[in-house]
Length: 544
Ligand code: GLN
Image (cartoon, rainbow, N blue to C red):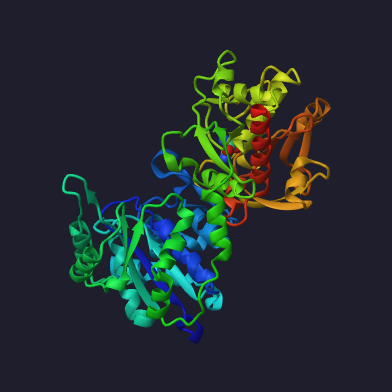
């Protein structure tokens, strides 16, 4: 190990009692605090499931698939890391049991183990540790690596990961490793009491495998009294100062501030022997104020498909929050099912809505309703923002209702469409494997001057992230343009249409990419910002 690598500090975040306590946000919030202290920090997520990546998993089960610049399809927690740290994540920042085993099995087949028995300890644990180390970057580019272990302590699947992080302390020493456990202190209404027992059990479970947490983050709906904190401290063998209350909050962006008030960042720096000054949280505090106390409120209709699971459009929901700040507006996302939308009832759908966003998606369900909603927004000057499938459906709607190509469609929905406005990219025709084979990751896009896209970005060359198989069909470019559609963004070789818009409409813009992945807590995405501005203007006009 090089001298530099020895300097890297590792913070391991585990979760106990129940899932969905927000380990991702907790890790990101701590990361933001350390960054505000001037420390180079990155975050890594280890997912214990057997899928190679979440790319093939149903958003109903797993929530959104977050795409990185380098084209990795990753866990949605990486989105929190990027938004809180304003840092690009990559393939290196997420791995799964599936990937770990895939690598080991590949080596085993190649004969690399020279006849030895391949075992969980040391082969799987070594592979996990190698991945954790890799996150620090070449020559320890990052001083601190926060490593979040997915799942809940006690799950069978997470055992090899917990064993690997237990060993890690032996490898790097106490001053370079810290265990932080996120747990729940439930409030029992009938007793009128907070209960610490589940936390005691979950810490015991960790200790059984040799991990003594250094810090406990206690999620709770009621403030922890001094008595409760000492009880947790005594039973869990964690100093009282290191029992941090993580009270339910209105906005996740408050979390770094409430951790800081309790001294979490100082505590972590002391434990890891990191010397820095106090964090600069001025702009963060300002942003939180903007999120919590805006002047106005508007409602955006989000016409997606996975409306039942809250996390399916996580990055879009967060991008709305960020875009609300510069517009002094709270954005309420109203997720609508488009299955039942028809020409007759579409107007009702828009009651109380100030803008329409059609997000990315796959498959035919709900498409006719989306097309009706887009037509209504286009004809009535309601701000519209199309993302990926949203661009594709907007193009189909325009081709059908403005260009008169009634049979216009996407080959995704009708392979033999008479007018395949959206078609399969040639390099996709032979694809058999579904995992990791779409057009994925960051691609450059050239914007046309004088368009709304150009106005939003303020620069001619942008880079955005993609995740799709189908594209606008170049054969129809002239027809669409002749009827007034503006192609405002193209790939630098002009082979692919990346953005479209209308200029006889207050704000009708769509992109073939996913801008939501690049929106940051303190840096709203330009397209979201301008869309929300247009929707706010529309709402004012409605009122006035
Ligand atoms: N289903 C469409 C495609 O594959 C759109 C994908 C998306 O919206 N991410 O091209």
